[in-house]
Length: 592
Ligand SMILES: Cc1cc2nc3c(=O)[nH]c(=O)nc-3n(C[C@H](O)[C@H](O)[C@H](O)COP(=O)(O)OP(=O)(O)OC[C@H]3O[C@@H](n4cnc5c(N)ncnc54)[C@H](O)[C@@H]3O)c2cc1C
Image 1 (cartoon, rainbow, N blue to C red):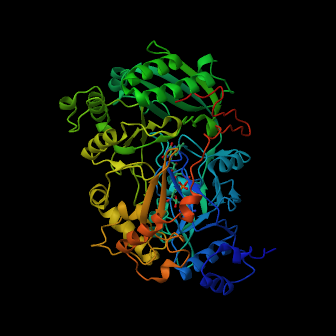
Image 2 (tube, protein in one colour):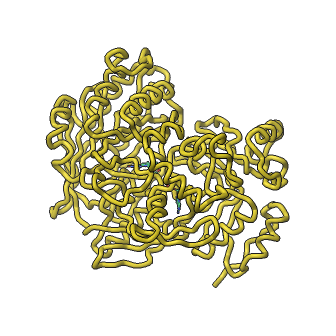
Image 3 (cartoon, rainbow, N blue to C red):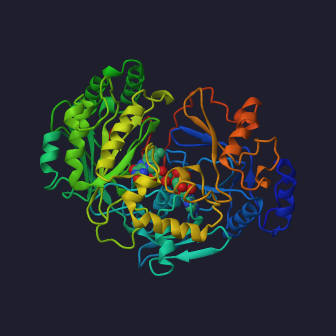
């Protein structure tokens, strides 16, 4: 039965809001709250949307969009906020589909599941498991919503698989005019290619049909090797010997951890017990990283100690296990972190990795990276993964993998011990991005890249970027789904493509005492004491900054509500059905 509206007068919205809401079907609930504080998984960005909306049906999603259009608001759809950048930050309206995540149908013959788009991948795999099916590939975690994961081109590591979105057979998206449109490789194929990696900029994806494979166990083997061994096998069988392969590159040790897995009929086998691998290792590593914030030159030693204790000080030390594919492909991501991941052609990998290694060892000249490495130490191994989409069609326009060569993904992770930013980040990421750009690299859309704009992406993506923008602008001419992140990255400067009427601009970001940043956009209600700023048609960024000056002077509602968390939050401990996955438990370091 339809629910009545919540007490809308308490929303403190402009009078026009209630008038517009009353014009819409009262039998379709409008589930909104105003107290939601949005933050990324790593707590690096926080924002407070004017309204947080949790629709439970397509009709409810359509109502949100219609009302947003009439109220001149931007709409951001958020999955589980796991994108590490400010991509999902907004002061406008935020839609979350956690209450819209049912399995709609299972086609056993075709091995597909049709689901509502808010379903988390963990739940999707559990539901599929009841029918003997599983997702063909996974990244490091399965917490993401399926729509959010495909939305940023999430990938795992395999020469047999590409992006997770390769398994989407068709989808239904609600556009800015409220229309629900189905698309697939044969039905509106341009819209389909744009929607497969849409960065939330097209509309709200409501349903997806996803291709599964037979559920199975995987047997994994993890070995620590000198980097010379890894490089010598690069063009032979390093990436092809098993269905799933990923590498952690340890620049100071000059060794790498190679993780390989294949599907198997073998029964579960737990990895050998290691007293250091659980809470002891977790906290020791965390404390050492924290000490290195003040004494960065200990970092090479930390790397040697931590990974030696866990994986052995001898080359060739091995850990193995057999578990379900849906959990076996996952890993522990440990602490809050920045991540900066790029894809480059696989063949360029050895050269790129060696240049970066030389640079980290202080050899600026030999590395050919024109930034000084003097006194710079980083505290993380580099995650090295592959994807192969050669010959696969249709590809998303914003596919981060290459059409004509297997792709190598290099992820420069930087932990933030106890939520503190590492001092090396600025220079390390400048150098890393410079290197990646030399190989025409493509940044992972969700992550913390810093020097990417439309000009660079046009070079890297060519016509595919223009095609994406053509489709996007056609289906969302008012820019209801655009924000400052999109303007900074994929959109041309305003001199070439003027601001869209509903595009949200960033106004200010503020460093938080306990780490991370508060992000505040132009559509924030507090700017002028609750007056609807959108009535001032076409307010541009200059005007925004004038408003900001006033806003900073007063104790703003929004800044108050974005107060820092006083206490370090307790580490989340998760126990899931049929798994033994603990963030601080015994299996922390089993798999990198
Ligand atoms: C610990 C951790 C591990 C990770 N591991 C990997 C990995 O192994 N491989 C990898 O490639 N990435 C990885 N990521 C990145 C992650 O997969 C992506 O950031 C993903 O987009 C997050 O999904 P989400 O549900 O949180 O989406 P969000 O971050 O909330 O949103 C992502 C994008 O999708 C859009 N969106 C969400 N739902 C919809 C919808 N219904 N309709 C339209 N647009 C929508 C949003 O607007 C946004 O643009 C990891 C991130 C973390 C924090």
